[in-house]
Structure formats: C-alpha cells, structure tokens
Image (cartoon, rainbow, N blue to C red; front, side):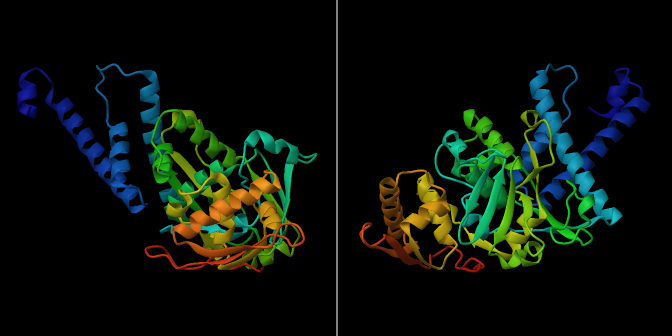
Length: 382
C-alpha cells in the first residue's frame, strides 16, 4: 500500500515517512551485516538463518519469551561482535585477516594425552593433589587443569578449528578476550576468532542438529573453555623462545559469549599459543578418515598422523594416547585400528614382536591419499 493510500486511511504522512526511512535503514544495515558475515566465512545458509532471527516481529503477534530471547540474543551477539571488531580495527588495536582452515591440529597436542579415549568418570584416578592430570611423553611434559577431556571433546575442538574465520594481529590487551604474547607481553600477538553455532559444529562432524546432542555438544564447548594446559617441557621449535623462561601455559579456547544456553551463536577466540601451533607446528587430521574409527582408533590415528614414518612400541603408544584399557585389549584395538587405516589406503604397517621376550612394535608409514592434502605435519623433534 502506498504512502498516499495509507494517508487516506488516516495515518499522518510525517509518521509514514519516518516509518519508511526506518525500514530503509534496517534493510541497508541488514545487507551490510550479511556481506560482512559472508566475508568472514559464514555460509549463505547460516547468514539467512541469522537474518530470519533478526527480522523485526509483528508487535501484534505473540511470541514465546524463550523463542524471542534466543533470536534477539543471537542477532545482538552478531551485531555487537562485528561492531567490536570494526571499532577495534579503526582504533588501531589490531588488524583483521581472513583465514582458510585446512584440517590443521597442533602437533604437540597429538603427542600428549590431553584428550583421552574412554569414559570421563574413570579419569578421576589420574588427578594429582591439585586436581590436575599429569602427562609425560617424549614430546612433552606437564599438567592439564580443568575438567577431564575425552575424544568427544577433541571432536568438538576439531570442528571449531575447521570453522575458524578471522585472525587478529595487535595489542593483546585489546583483543575481544584480553591476552598476552606468550613470550613477550610488550609484543604484538595473534588470536583467531570463530562465529558459529552448535548446529554448525554438529553438521561439520556429520551429525544431526538439535535434540539431546545440542546440549551435550554445548557442554563440551564449555569444558574446552575451562581447561588450562601447563607445559614444563615441550619438544616444539615454535615454543623454544617461551620454554627457555621455564614453563608456559595456555588455554585451548576462550568463550567471548556468556549465557550460552540462551544463544544460538558461539563467539570463540583461540589464544596466542594455539594460533602459533596452528601456524607453525601442526598436523593434518583428515575428518573423512577419523569418521571410520572408534574413540581409541581416533587417538591412535591422531598420533600416527603427526609422524610421516612411525616406529613405536605398543606400550609407549598406550601411554601417548592415554588409554585406560588393559594391555591385551589395547593390543587388540590397535590391530583393528591399523587394519581399518590400511584398508582405506591411509598407511602401510606391521606389528613385530611377540609381547613377551620381544616387545610388540608398530612400524609403518603414511601413504599419499588422492583428494587429501599431502603436506606432512611440521615435524617436531622426535
């Protein structure tokens, strides 16, 4: 209906003009936000979903408080996050860059048992007097503080890493979540940010959205945000300048968002050490391979993926993966995992020894895979 027609029905022209201007501004703002989201790596489907949630509602239409709160919070989160990043860049706090994830995973985390296969309830026995889990392998020594993490939580992290969109470079204290350069607080540092949803994480992992899986995955994100890893030794060239000063600690992720149960979007920041690993000391974890494996199989595959060639005793492999299985059962699981990996063309292998007078030793090498990245991990000192 035109402005003139509406005026004939009794609506003042001045009010109609104001309403039309407001509507025009809203449409312009929505178009700008949609373009910004696309530039930051959002899929068109997710942008449309967010636009639908942000659409002005009919004042006369009843909407449940829960539904209204979720949509309004989601739209407000995106708007505030975008505005915060834009204003920070304009002030010169940091610069923004697009990033394109390619299945990178920190090699050091692939070689220490931070994420263990098995039930979370059985991991309490590993905690020390500080309620921290001690770990030590040939590549790293330290403690993990916070809730126990399983392979399920590692899947959550892999999805988050695969959905990264932006890298920020600048003053650590000015980042969305204030941080410090791991080696020198006075230097510029790097963080990466992720805007995503629980549904998008589930979809990345090949799982269905909604249902009980939504709350379980959200709890996993919270666990990741509640963990701090302390290293007192790390065979990692990328961290040599840091480890010289003693131990170093890092979180896995930071949650910029709050009241997560009410939000359909997650605003996640990866801290400087994680960014350093993902840029300089990483392993490629192929999700299409990982989906063929059990939790123990995923733990074994993760470690082997960090080695172009592998030669490790089964006993040492059990320690590196953090398995709680009896030795005989772990041997059986390892044999089954290696058969699966060989059958899909991921590796060639042999298991030598008899487990009595001669220890069982897993030997082999990764094979080139068509359609998969052939770049090896940035090998750490072995």
